[in-house]
Amino acid sequence: MEGRTTFEDYVSKTPKSKALYERAKRVLPAGVSYSIRLFDPYPFYTARAKGSKLYDVDGNEYIDFWLGHTALILGHSPPAVVKAVKKQLENGTHYGTAHELEIALAEQVAKMIPSAEMIRFTNSGTEANMYAVRLARAYTGRTKIAKFESGWHGGYDALHKAVKPPYDMPESAGLTQGALQDTLVLPFNNLEGVRKRLEGLENQVAAIIIEPVLGVGGAIPAEKEFLKGLREFCDQHGILLIVDEVITGFRLAPGGVQQYFGVRPDITVLGKILGGGFPIGAFCGPAEIMERVDHTRYSRPQTSFHGGTFTANPITMTAGLTTLKMLEDGLLINRLNRLGDKIRDELTDIFESKGVDIQVTGTGSLFGVHFTKEEVKEPGAAFRADRQRLNEYHLRLIANGVFFLPTHNGCLCTAHTRADIEKLFSETENFAKSLKS
Ligand SMILES: Cc1ncc(COP(=O)(O)O)c(C=O)c1O
Image 1: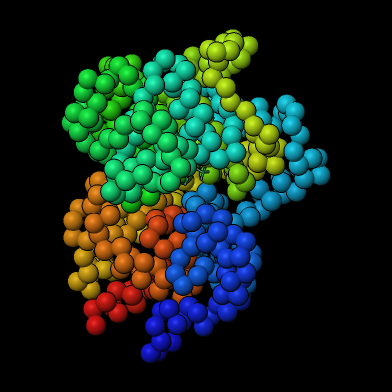
Image 2: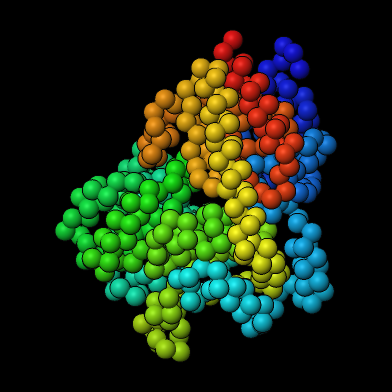
Protein backbone atom coordinates (compact mmCIF):
# COMPACT_ATOMS: atom_id res chain seq x y z
CA MET A 1 0.00 0.00 0.00
CA GLU A 2 1.42 3.39 -1.08
CA GLY A 3 2.31 5.74 1.73
CA ARG A 4 1.85 3.22 4.52
CA THR A 5 4.76 2.03 6.63
CA THR A 6 5.52 -1.68 6.79
CA PHE A 7 4.38 -1.64 10.39
CA GLU A 8 1.00 -0.09 9.52
CA ASP A 9 0.64 -2.45 6.61
CA TYR A 10 1.23 -5.50 8.83
CA VAL A 11 -1.10 -4.25 11.56
CA SER A 12 -3.90 -3.51 9.11
CA LYS A 13 -3.74 -7.08 7.77
CA THR A 14 -3.59 -8.88 11.12
CA PRO A 15 -6.37 -7.66 13.50
CA LYS A 16 -7.26 -11.18 14.69
CA SER A 17 -3.63 -11.95 15.44
CA LYS A 18 -3.39 -8.73 17.43
CA ALA A 19 -6.38 -9.80 19.55
CA LEU A 20 -4.90 -13.27 20.08
CA TYR A 21 -1.61 -11.74 21.13
CA GLU A 22 -3.39 -9.66 23.80
CA ARG A 23 -5.06 -12.84 25.04
CA ALA A 24 -1.80 -14.84 24.91
CA LYS A 25 0.10 -12.31 27.04
CA ARG A 26 -2.16 -13.04 29.97
CA VAL A 27 -1.28 -16.74 30.11
CA LEU A 28 2.00 -17.19 28.24
CA PRO A 29 5.00 -15.11 29.42
CA ALA A 30 5.70 -12.63 26.58
CA GLY A 31 2.68 -14.14 24.82
CA VAL A 32 4.73 -16.95 23.29
CA SER A 33 6.05 -20.44 23.97
CA TYR A 34 9.62 -19.63 22.84
CA SER A 35 11.11 -16.14 23.11
CA ILE A 36 12.48 -16.16 19.55
CA ARG A 37 8.98 -16.49 18.11
CA LEU A 38 8.05 -13.02 19.32
CA PHE A 39 8.66 -10.14 16.93
CA ASP A 40 7.47 -6.54 16.67
CA PRO A 41 4.70 -5.45 16.67
CA TYR A 42 3.31 -8.95 17.48
CA PRO A 43 3.49 -12.34 15.82
CA PHE A 44 0.80 -13.48 13.43
CA TYR A 45 -1.09 -16.54 14.65
CA THR A 46 -1.01 -19.53 12.35
CA ALA A 47 -4.34 -21.23 11.69
CA ARG A 48 -3.06 -23.92 9.34
CA ALA A 49 -0.14 -24.86 7.16
CA LYS A 50 0.29 -26.88 4.00
CA GLY A 51 3.22 -27.43 1.64
CA SER A 52 5.35 -24.28 1.48
CA LYS A 53 2.66 -22.06 3.05
CA LEU A 54 1.46 -20.83 6.41
CA TYR A 55 -2.04 -19.32 6.71
CA ASP A 56 -2.83 -17.02 9.60
CA VAL A 57 -6.08 -16.45 11.48
CA ASP A 58 -6.82 -13.37 9.35
CA GLY A 59 -6.61 -15.43 6.15
CA ASN A 60 -3.18 -14.14 5.07
CA GLU A 61 -0.89 -16.53 3.23
CA TYR A 62 2.86 -16.66 3.79
CA ILE A 63 5.53 -18.55 1.86
CA ASP A 64 7.44 -20.16 4.70
CA PHE A 65 11.25 -19.96 4.76
CA TRP A 66 11.44 -20.65 8.51
CA LEU A 67 9.78 -24.06 8.19
CA GLY A 68 9.28 -24.94 11.82
CA HIS A 69 12.78 -23.92 12.95
CA THR A 70 14.22 -25.63 9.79
CA ALA A 71 12.64 -28.99 10.65
CA LEU A 72 10.27 -29.31 7.69
CA ILE A 73 12.43 -30.25 4.71
CA LEU A 74 9.41 -31.76 2.93
CA GLY A 75 7.21 -28.75 3.76
CA HIS A 76 4.12 -28.74 5.96
CA SER A 77 2.07 -31.96 6.20
CA PRO A 78 3.67 -33.85 3.30
CA PRO A 79 1.10 -36.41 2.03
CA ALA A 80 3.29 -39.50 2.60
CA VAL A 81 3.97 -38.53 6.24
CA VAL A 82 0.31 -37.66 6.87
CA LYS A 83 -0.75 -41.05 5.51
CA ALA A 84 1.73 -42.97 7.68
CA VAL A 85 0.82 -40.98 10.79
CA LYS A 86 -2.94 -41.42 10.27
CA LYS A 87 -2.42 -45.17 10.12
CA GLN A 88 -0.29 -45.14 13.25
CA LEU A 89 -2.83 -42.97 15.14
CA GLU A 90 -5.26 -45.89 14.92
CA ASN A 91 -2.66 -48.23 16.37
CA GLY A 92 -1.75 -46.15 19.40
CA THR A 93 -0.26 -42.72 20.01
CA HIS A 94 2.18 -43.60 22.76
CA TYR A 95 3.13 -47.03 24.03
CA GLY A 96 5.71 -46.62 26.77
CA THR A 97 6.94 -50.09 25.81
CA ALA A 98 9.45 -51.44 23.29
CA HIS A 99 8.14 -51.54 19.71
CA GLU A 100 9.39 -52.28 16.21
CA LEU A 101 9.25 -48.75 14.80
CA GLU A 102 12.03 -47.58 17.11
CA ILE A 103 14.26 -50.33 15.71
CA ALA A 104 13.30 -49.46 12.14
CA LEU A 105 14.15 -45.77 12.57
CA ALA A 106 17.42 -46.57 14.37
CA GLU A 107 18.35 -48.97 11.53
CA GLN A 108 17.51 -46.30 8.98
CA VAL A 109 19.73 -43.73 10.72
CA ALA A 110 22.56 -46.27 11.00
CA LYS A 111 22.21 -47.05 7.32
CA MET A 112 22.43 -43.39 6.30
CA ILE A 113 25.03 -42.03 8.75
CA PRO A 114 28.27 -44.04 8.60
CA SER A 115 29.47 -43.29 12.15
CA ALA A 116 26.07 -43.98 13.75
CA GLU A 117 26.19 -47.64 14.72
CA MET A 118 23.88 -47.22 17.70
CA ILE A 119 21.25 -44.58 18.46
CA ARG A 120 19.16 -43.37 21.36
CA PHE A 121 16.11 -41.17 20.80
CA THR A 122 15.07 -38.14 22.85
CA ASN A 123 12.23 -35.62 22.47
CA SER A 124 14.27 -32.55 21.53
CA GLY A 125 17.68 -31.47 20.34
CA THR A 126 18.33 -29.87 23.73
CA GLU A 127 17.82 -33.16 25.49
CA ALA A 128 19.94 -35.05 22.96
CA ASN A 129 22.83 -32.63 23.52
CA MET A 130 22.45 -32.98 27.27
CA TYR A 131 22.75 -36.77 27.05
CA ALA A 132 25.60 -36.54 24.53
CA VAL A 133 27.59 -34.35 26.91
CA ARG A 134 26.95 -36.76 29.76
CA LEU A 135 28.00 -39.69 27.59
CA ALA A 136 31.23 -37.94 26.57
CA ARG A 137 32.04 -37.33 30.22
CA ALA A 138 31.20 -40.91 31.15
CA TYR A 139 33.28 -42.33 28.30
CA THR A 140 36.38 -40.17 28.81
CA GLY A 141 36.21 -39.77 32.57
CA ARG A 142 36.87 -36.04 32.04
CA THR A 143 34.69 -33.11 33.08
CA LYS A 144 35.22 -30.14 30.77
CA ILE A 145 33.25 -29.46 27.60
CA ALA A 146 34.35 -26.98 24.94
CA LYS A 147 31.83 -25.22 22.69
CA PHE A 148 32.13 -22.45 20.12
CA GLU A 149 31.20 -18.79 20.31
CA SER A 150 27.59 -18.46 19.10
CA GLY A 151 27.12 -22.21 18.97
CA TRP A 152 23.51 -22.99 19.85
CA HIS A 153 22.79 -26.42 21.26
CA GLY A 154 19.56 -25.72 23.14
CA GLY A 155 18.89 -24.49 26.64
CA TYR A 156 20.76 -27.15 28.68
CA ASP A 157 22.76 -25.36 31.38
CA ALA A 158 26.22 -26.64 30.44
CA LEU A 159 25.81 -25.57 26.80
CA HIS A 160 23.81 -22.39 27.33
CA LYS A 161 26.88 -20.22 27.36
CA ALA A 162 28.42 -17.67 24.92
CA VAL A 163 25.57 -17.88 22.42
CA LYS A 164 25.35 -14.16 21.68
CA PRO A 165 27.90 -11.41 22.22
CA PRO A 166 29.05 -10.25 24.72
CA TYR A 167 30.16 -13.83 25.28
CA ASP A 168 31.18 -13.27 28.88
CA MET A 169 27.64 -12.24 29.91
CA PRO A 170 25.43 -15.11 31.17
CA GLU A 171 22.77 -16.08 28.64
CA SER A 172 20.15 -16.52 31.34
CA ALA A 173 19.49 -16.01 34.98
CA GLY A 174 19.41 -19.17 37.03
CA LEU A 175 22.57 -20.74 35.62
CA THR A 176 24.88 -21.66 38.46
CA GLN A 177 28.63 -21.17 38.41
CA GLY A 178 28.80 -24.88 39.12
CA ALA A 179 26.99 -25.70 35.89
CA LEU A 180 29.02 -23.34 33.73
CA GLN A 181 32.52 -23.56 35.13
CA ASP A 182 33.35 -26.71 33.18
CA THR A 183 32.28 -25.22 29.85
CA LEU A 184 35.08 -23.61 27.81
CA VAL A 185 34.41 -21.31 24.88
CA LEU A 186 36.31 -21.46 21.57
CA PRO A 187 36.58 -19.20 18.49
CA PHE A 188 34.83 -20.54 15.37
CA ASN A 189 36.82 -21.31 12.21
CA ASN A 190 40.05 -20.53 14.04
CA LEU A 191 42.18 -23.60 14.82
CA GLU A 192 45.05 -21.60 16.24
CA GLY A 193 42.58 -19.91 18.60
CA VAL A 194 41.22 -23.31 19.68
CA ARG A 195 44.73 -24.55 20.46
CA LYS A 196 45.56 -21.42 22.46
CA ARG A 197 42.39 -21.44 24.56
CA LEU A 198 42.79 -25.11 25.43
CA GLU A 199 46.52 -25.00 26.08
CA GLY A 200 47.31 -26.91 29.26
CA LEU A 201 43.69 -28.03 29.64
CA GLU A 202 43.62 -30.58 26.82
CA ASN A 203 43.49 -33.66 28.99
CA GLN A 204 40.63 -32.31 31.08
CA VAL A 205 38.36 -31.88 28.04
CA ALA A 206 35.81 -34.66 27.48
CA ALA A 207 34.41 -33.24 24.24
CA ILE A 208 34.43 -30.38 21.79
CA ILE A 209 30.92 -29.76 20.45
CA ILE A 210 30.36 -27.94 17.18
CA GLU A 211 27.54 -26.95 14.87
CA PRO A 212 28.95 -27.59 11.38
CA VAL A 213 26.94 -24.59 10.17
CA LEU A 214 26.32 -22.00 12.89
CA GLY A 215 22.60 -21.32 13.12
CA VAL A 216 22.02 -18.49 15.60
CA GLY A 217 25.58 -17.45 14.71
CA GLY A 218 24.52 -16.49 11.19
CA ALA A 219 24.40 -19.52 8.85
CA ILE A 220 28.19 -19.69 8.82
CA PRO A 221 29.64 -22.99 7.60
CA ALA A 222 32.72 -24.40 9.27
CA GLU A 223 35.64 -24.51 6.84
CA LYS A 224 36.63 -28.03 5.79
CA GLU A 225 40.25 -27.49 6.78
CA PHE A 226 39.14 -26.20 10.17
CA LEU A 227 37.00 -29.29 10.80
CA LYS A 228 39.85 -31.53 9.65
CA GLY A 229 42.24 -29.77 12.03
CA LEU A 230 39.71 -30.02 14.85
CA ARG A 231 39.33 -33.76 14.26
CA GLU A 232 43.13 -34.18 14.41
CA PHE A 233 43.36 -32.05 17.54
CA CYS A 234 40.68 -34.19 19.25
CA ASP A 235 42.44 -37.43 18.24
CA GLN A 236 45.75 -36.12 19.49
CA HIS A 237 44.32 -35.36 22.94
CA GLY A 238 41.73 -38.11 23.44
CA ILE A 239 38.88 -35.59 23.18
CA LEU A 240 35.55 -36.67 21.66
CA LEU A 241 34.19 -34.61 18.79
CA ILE A 242 30.44 -34.09 19.15
CA VAL A 243 28.89 -32.76 15.97
CA ASP A 244 25.52 -31.14 16.57
CA GLU A 245 23.63 -31.93 13.39
CA VAL A 246 20.24 -30.90 14.73
CA ILE A 247 19.87 -28.45 11.82
CA THR A 248 22.24 -29.95 9.22
CA GLY A 249 21.34 -33.63 9.68
CA PHE A 250 19.45 -34.98 6.63
CA ARG A 251 19.41 -31.45 5.20
CA LEU A 252 22.89 -31.05 3.67
CA ALA A 253 23.48 -34.69 2.76
CA PRO A 254 21.83 -38.04 3.53
CA GLY A 255 25.03 -39.12 5.32
CA GLY A 256 25.59 -36.01 7.44
CA VAL A 257 28.86 -34.10 7.97
CA GLN A 258 30.98 -37.11 7.14
CA GLN A 259 29.57 -37.03 3.63
CA TYR A 260 29.23 -33.25 3.27
CA PHE A 261 32.35 -31.97 5.02
CA GLY A 262 34.47 -35.14 5.17
CA VAL A 263 34.78 -35.16 8.96
CA ARG A 264 33.98 -38.14 11.19
CA PRO A 265 32.19 -37.29 14.45
CA ASP A 266 32.49 -39.41 17.57
CA ILE A 267 28.99 -38.53 18.69
CA THR A 268 26.38 -37.10 16.30
CA VAL A 269 23.41 -35.21 17.70
CA LEU A 270 20.26 -35.17 15.59
CA GLY A 271 16.80 -33.61 15.79
CA LYS A 272 14.36 -31.59 13.67
CA ILE A 273 14.17 -33.36 10.26
CA LEU A 274 14.62 -36.76 11.92
CA GLY A 275 11.15 -36.38 13.49
CA GLY A 276 9.32 -35.83 10.20
CA GLY A 277 7.46 -32.84 11.70
CA PHE A 278 7.06 -34.28 15.22
CA PRO A 279 9.20 -33.61 18.33
CA ILE A 280 12.50 -35.49 18.39
CA GLY A 281 16.18 -35.56 19.16
CA ALA A 282 18.76 -38.35 19.06
CA PHE A 283 22.39 -39.02 19.82
CA CYS A 284 24.36 -41.69 18.06
CA GLY A 285 27.83 -42.99 17.40
CA PRO A 286 30.05 -46.06 17.30
CA ALA A 287 28.94 -48.98 19.49
CA GLU A 288 32.09 -48.65 21.55
CA ILE A 289 30.96 -45.22 22.79
CA MET A 290 27.19 -45.78 22.79
CA GLU A 291 27.54 -48.92 24.88
CA ARG A 292 28.16 -46.71 27.90
CA VAL A 293 24.40 -46.07 27.82
CA ASP A 294 23.78 -49.81 28.06
CA HIS A 295 22.93 -50.44 31.71
CA THR A 296 23.30 -54.20 31.18
CA ARG A 297 26.99 -53.72 30.37
CA TYR A 298 27.84 -50.85 32.65
CA SER A 299 26.13 -50.77 35.97
CA ARG A 300 25.74 -47.79 38.26
CA PRO A 301 27.80 -45.59 38.61
CA GLN A 302 29.59 -46.45 35.32
CA THR A 303 26.54 -46.34 33.09
CA SER A 304 25.58 -43.08 31.36
CA PHE A 305 21.86 -42.77 32.01
CA HIS A 306 19.37 -41.84 29.31
CA GLY A 307 15.58 -42.23 29.12
CA GLY A 308 12.22 -40.46 29.09
CA THR A 309 8.44 -40.99 28.97
CA PHE A 310 7.97 -40.08 25.32
CA THR A 311 11.28 -41.39 23.92
CA ALA A 312 10.75 -43.24 20.62
CA ASN A 313 7.12 -42.18 20.45
CA PRO A 314 5.52 -44.28 17.68
CA ILE A 315 3.97 -41.29 15.88
CA THR A 316 7.35 -39.57 15.66
CA MET A 317 9.09 -42.81 14.69
CA THR A 318 6.74 -43.42 11.78
CA ALA A 319 6.89 -39.81 10.58
CA GLY A 320 10.69 -39.83 10.80
CA LEU A 321 11.03 -43.14 9.01
CA THR A 322 8.79 -42.02 6.15
CA THR A 323 10.79 -38.80 5.84
CA LEU A 324 14.23 -40.42 5.89
CA LYS A 325 13.23 -42.95 3.26
CA MET A 326 12.32 -40.07 0.97
CA LEU A 327 15.66 -38.36 1.59
CA GLU A 328 17.87 -41.42 1.48
CA ASP A 329 18.90 -41.35 -2.19
CA GLY A 330 20.01 -37.71 -1.92
CA LEU A 331 18.07 -36.54 -4.98
CA LEU A 332 15.73 -34.18 -3.12
CA ILE A 333 18.55 -32.91 -0.89
CA ASN A 334 20.82 -32.21 -3.86
CA ARG A 335 18.07 -30.36 -5.66
CA LEU A 336 17.53 -28.15 -2.60
CA ASN A 337 21.29 -27.59 -2.27
CA ARG A 338 21.46 -26.33 -5.86
CA LEU A 339 18.48 -24.06 -5.22
CA GLY A 340 20.31 -22.75 -2.15
CA ASP A 341 23.28 -21.77 -4.35
CA LYS A 342 20.94 -19.91 -6.67
CA ILE A 343 19.30 -18.08 -3.78
CA ARG A 344 22.62 -16.97 -2.30
CA ASP A 345 23.78 -15.67 -5.71
CA GLU A 346 20.53 -13.96 -6.57
CA LEU A 347 20.00 -12.24 -3.20
CA THR A 348 23.59 -10.98 -3.33
CA ASP A 349 23.07 -9.64 -6.88
CA ILE A 350 19.78 -7.93 -6.01
CA PHE A 351 21.27 -5.99 -3.10
CA GLU A 352 24.61 -5.29 -4.78
CA SER A 353 22.92 -3.94 -7.90
CA LYS A 354 21.18 -1.40 -5.66
CA GLY A 355 24.45 -0.47 -3.95
CA VAL A 356 23.52 -2.09 -0.62
CA ASP A 357 26.35 -3.68 1.44
CA ILE A 358 25.46 -7.35 1.73
CA GLN A 359 26.87 -10.75 2.64
CA VAL A 360 24.75 -13.83 2.08
CA THR A 361 26.05 -16.78 4.06
CA GLY A 362 25.05 -20.42 4.29
CA THR A 363 25.54 -23.65 2.44
CA GLY A 364 23.21 -26.20 0.91
CA SER A 365 19.61 -25.23 1.60
CA LEU A 366 20.44 -22.90 4.52
CA PHE A 367 21.03 -19.19 3.99
CA GLY A 368 21.51 -16.04 6.05
CA VAL A 369 21.48 -12.39 5.02
CA HIS A 370 23.81 -9.85 6.65
CA PHE A 371 23.81 -6.13 5.89
CA THR A 372 27.54 -5.51 6.06
CA LYS A 373 30.60 -5.05 3.87
CA GLU A 374 32.64 -7.29 6.15
CA GLU A 375 33.16 -10.90 5.14
CA VAL A 376 31.15 -13.12 7.54
CA LYS A 377 33.32 -16.10 8.49
CA GLU A 378 32.86 -15.95 12.21
CA PRO A 379 29.82 -14.96 14.27
CA GLY A 380 31.28 -11.65 15.50
CA ALA A 381 30.94 -10.29 11.96
CA ALA A 382 27.31 -11.45 11.78
CA PHE A 383 26.50 -9.62 15.00
CA ARG A 384 28.35 -6.47 13.86
CA ALA A 385 26.16 -6.30 10.73
CA ASP A 386 23.12 -4.00 10.63
CA ARG A 387 20.54 -6.16 12.42
CA GLN A 388 18.01 -3.36 12.54
CA ARG A 389 17.97 -3.35 8.74
CA LEU A 390 17.69 -7.15 8.72
CA ASN A 391 14.67 -6.89 10.99
CA GLU A 392 13.10 -4.30 8.63
CA TYR A 393 13.79 -6.53 5.63
CA HIS A 394 12.12 -9.51 7.26
CA LEU A 395 9.13 -7.53 8.48
CA ARG A 396 8.69 -6.09 5.00
CA LEU A 397 8.74 -9.61 3.57
CA ILE A 398 6.21 -10.80 6.16
CA ALA A 399 3.86 -7.91 5.41
CA ASN A 400 4.01 -9.02 1.78
CA GLY A 401 3.46 -12.72 2.34
CA VAL A 402 6.98 -14.13 2.73
CA PHE A 403 7.87 -15.49 6.16
CA PHE A 404 11.30 -15.43 7.76
CA LEU A 405 11.45 -15.34 11.52
CA PRO A 406 12.90 -11.82 11.87
CA THR A 407 16.72 -11.77 12.03
CA HIS A 408 16.92 -15.56 11.62
CA ASN A 409 18.21 -17.64 8.74
CA GLY A 410 16.09 -19.03 5.96
CA CYS A 411 15.89 -22.56 4.62
CA LEU A 412 14.30 -24.44 1.77
CA CYS A 413 11.88 -27.33 1.48
CA THR A 414 10.88 -29.60 -1.37
CA ALA A 415 7.41 -27.97 -1.45
CA HIS A 416 8.78 -24.55 -2.48
CA THR A 417 7.69 -23.74 -6.02
CA ARG A 418 9.41 -21.65 -8.65
CA ALA A 419 6.75 -18.98 -8.00
CA ASP A 420 7.61 -18.99 -4.27
CA ILE A 421 11.26 -18.35 -5.04
CA GLU A 422 10.44 -15.66 -7.61
CA LYS A 423 8.30 -13.91 -5.00
CA LEU A 424 11.19 -13.96 -2.54
CA PHE A 425 13.34 -12.30 -5.20
CA SER A 426 10.75 -9.72 -6.27
CA GLU A 427 9.91 -8.70 -2.69
CA THR A 428 13.63 -8.48 -1.92
CA GLU A 429 14.07 -6.27 -4.97
CA ASN A 430 11.26 -3.98 -3.73
CA PHE A 431 12.94 -3.74 -0.33
CA ALA A 432 16.36 -3.07 -1.86
CA LYS A 433 14.87 -0.30 -4.03
CA SER A 434 13.25 1.32 -1.00
CA LEU A 435 16.65 1.51 0.69
CA LYS A 436 18.14 3.45 -2.17
CA SER A 437 15.55 6.23 -2.23
C1 LIG B 1 22.06 -26.83 16.25
C2 LIG B 1 20.97 -26.98 17.26
N1 LIG B 1 21.17 -27.79 18.31
C3 LIG B 1 20.21 -27.99 19.23
C4 LIG B 1 19.01 -27.34 19.15
C5 LIG B 1 17.97 -27.56 20.21
O1 LIG B 1 16.96 -28.35 19.69
P1 LIG B 1 15.48 -28.27 20.31
O2 LIG B 1 14.98 -26.89 20.02
O3 LIG B 1 14.74 -29.36 19.59
O4 LIG B 1 15.62 -28.55 21.77
C6 LIG B 1 18.75 -26.50 18.07
C7 LIG B 1 17.47 -25.80 17.97
O5 LIG B 1 17.26 -24.89 17.24
C8 LIG B 1 19.77 -26.30 17.11
O6 LIG B 1 19.58 -25.48 16.09
